[in-house]
Image 1: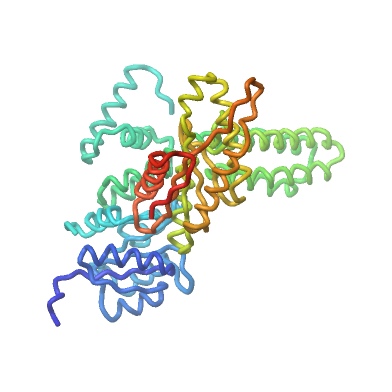
Image 2: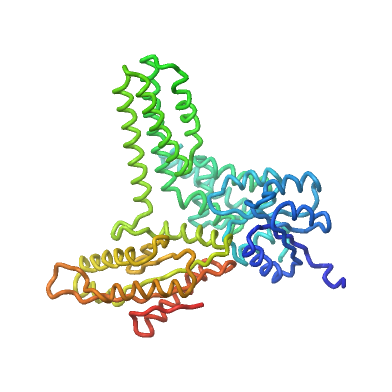
Length: 129
Length: 338
């Protein structure tokens, strides 16, 4: 079916099942197509199949962390249009700078809710989600 | 940089406000203090982070602004304590090193201490500073042992650093504590609530909240006086701390309202804790040196559980609504809202 071609596609990369579930619910309500990956390596492979418009990225993950993913992703795919929002917890402020330097577009602090995530997405994609 | 004279203050305010207008930032007190700090340049981490956002031409939306405020400014008092203490510790350390130099201790002996001194310039977290101070105590003890001549002076320096460590510890505790009850204060409660909700979102563990309000507290104050009212609040505080689990955080939320955060507790567990609190309080007279003896006080308690993805305000609001229901339905009871 091609009825969903205008939908944007978001990849949620987080080792927490709860975060993935919450993010999926919010993103679905914003009419995104959603896929999930539990670490950076799985995410990198998925990007090879279909390039997301948006990647919601956790910091701490086994196998391949968020920052490792951003670096590998930007190196492999260059300046593709995919935007990266990475998720951090309060007190991980120094991560913000490192992630921005590695090519993340914005960040969101956990715990996030639907309104917070929507505002971030709107800002990063320059759209009204 | 501290700005003292009125002309300079006015000039700085103009710069801050026009910069805020350029980025279309609403002129709220929170936002103003962010921009003020940014322009005055005391908080280098804030400045760098804001520069990153500006250079990425990302939006300073409400969330970003709030994040920045929470991260850099709402804990400003704590940061101030850390800053002051680290200056004092640096002084003590410089003394220690100059003593060591004068008595001819080998430079290698305090190489590690010098490294620590350099590291301290970059330390901004409480934990980092605590580690550092602990390490310094060890270092200065070691140096004292190595040098017979300087032994006494070394020990003196070491004990100065130990004093500073205790002062740091108590200043930090004070910044988080409600002075009347000795419980966590509202500011510390807010920051723990957010952090624990973040943990719960990551781990998928349950997280519950009790909101507790003394029944007819105004009547107690009017009948028995404010001093007795304060006694009652202290009595409730100690009852709470005795009754909750070790991992729970008890805070004075404001006035006669208290709150307990219960990590890894589902609704049933949280309601059970609430019931224990209610019963513990209602079963004994308030211990006061007054005659006639004051009858037991009662509390109404509202319970709610955190749902990851919901705003924190909604979670707290549900516990408040449950508390309101407990009051409506006759007080001295626990109510839960899903």
